[in-house]
Length: 163
Image (tube, rainbow, N blue to C red; front, side, top):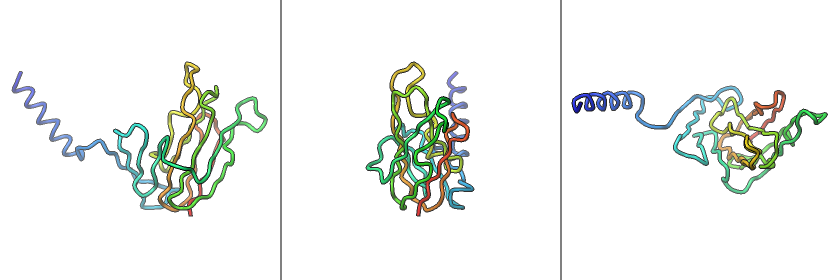
């Protein structure tokens, strides 16, 4: 049994070394994120994620330069939408998405070309009806145009232009 444990341990160490040996994932950003930018996410960060070159995302990064609200559902004649749908900020600014943490209809913020900046879980009430998260912040550190969507509501789109 000791020999088996040593063999498994050595195999895992070799595999981790071959894969980089860390919990940090790196991916290439495309399309709306500036070309050549690399995003990095540290899986051990519960409240924030970092995107080297693109920005940082989390629940409380600081004071927002601008805020985006979320409204509407199937009963709204305008449908679900971000308010405003397009914002412009400077490099280093924080954009904050605000939503009622007790709202029954959840919304998320998904950047297809900068996934580490996304809030996948969503804002609004949890499935059991208890209050969930109410804000999501992103600090943009690279100029460009960042398009995002709420995947819970087709057609709910927004854009952040960083200059």
